[in-house]
Image (cartoon, rainbow, N blue to C red; front, side, top):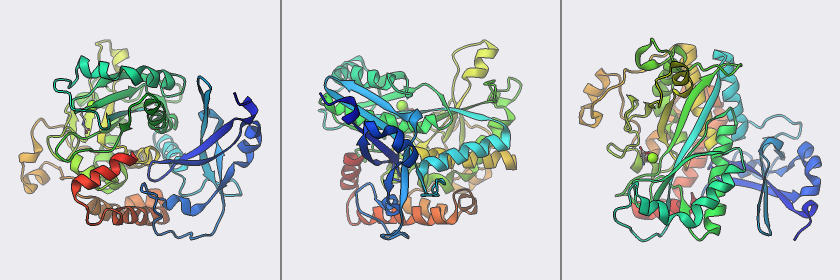
Amino acid sequence: MIASEDRLVFVGTSDIAGILRGKSFPAADWEKRLQRGVGWTPTNVQITCFDTISESPFGSFGDLALVPDPDTRITLKDGDDVFDFALGDIRSLEGEPWAFCTRSLARRSLEELHQASGARLLSAFEHEFQIKDMPPRPGDGFGLKGFRDARNWSGAFLASLAQTSCQPDTFMKEYGPSQYEITIKPTLGIVTPDNAAILRLLADDVIRRHGASPSFSPILDPDSVGNGVHIHFSFVDDDGAPLTYDPKAPHGMSRLTRHFIGGILHHLDQILAILAPSEISYLRLTPHRWSAAFNNLGYRDREAAVRICPVSTQDEEAVARQYNFEVRAIDAAASPHLAFAALLFAGTQGVKDQIEPPAPVNEDLSLLSASELAAKGFKRLPQTLDEALGKLGGSKAVRQWFGDEFVDLYLAHKRGEMAQLAGLGWPEKCSRYKEVY
Ligand code: GLU
Ligand code: MG
């Protein structure tokens, strides 16, 4: 067994592609590395999910530091194997947050929400994933058979999560073939996107060690179900009192909730290229897949981009704590930190501009013409990544939140990723993403 001071600690950044990249150092140097970090290269931000490098404004120039955050350190023991890991922030050599660090952007979005509203965010990611290359098993949608098929890895996976800030809430066999879902308990602030990164890395590490191979890719088979990421949102004040619910308001939405949702739905087409950032993401975002095809608000409607979720109590005080809404137009090709930041910036803009969301509807929007949709205040969301990138690049609001340099870099990153898929059919494109996410 390696002495604990000789053990390697990996410090990682969850980058634009939602991939954890980083470096390791001996655990004995932990205190030193907390100050100094490890050296990092600006152009790394343009490494795509296929490991190619998209056009970079930095070329071979520049130096940065990837500095571990002690609050994120995880040390997991499994027999002789010790997995020691921390998330980090990318800083300039002078110690300033780097404009392209996804975690720093997520932190800034939280500060802006707090400044605009006095609210802190209490939120949670919900993930769906499929086990690759598992033979079809009829009759296991939400089934006990499918749940038991996971017994070789599910216990170890959930036990590993339980040792981190990412505390499991529920686990189940989802509807799709070899598809599972895991929900996590809500957490404050930056811990939530950190938890999404931790969940994906432990899924890969622990489930694979137990002989199965998970994929969180948005869709594995163009003709089958997608793997969604849903983010649940609620607000508390500085003392922890809930701010999301108003018993007297329509559908229980407090003013803050209403305007925050209004801001998300108003800007959804402009931030979609960050939330659903692969070409195949748009196979999932089609009507009748229980994902999100329109910028609509649903009251307990699983086809809505934003859904007000049910509560399991009648007690008013408990309702106020449980009450939350989820955004469903997200997938795991997205960086959890960037998706989180984009939604917070959009929601906070809604709070500042007092944007009203469209009223929840209980109808199949896919049956309406474009003019009927427009009359009700709805839009079909972009139907390709190319269209979504066009909306992102043309959005003054997104450029104001993230900065022009970031938006232009993101567009170049994604264009480089798309070039890798040129000429491939949908099944081949799905196969490429299946192996990455
Ligand atoms: N698989 C659906 C999605 O892609 C979600 C199904 C559900 O949990 O409601 O978002
Ligand atoms: Mg689900």
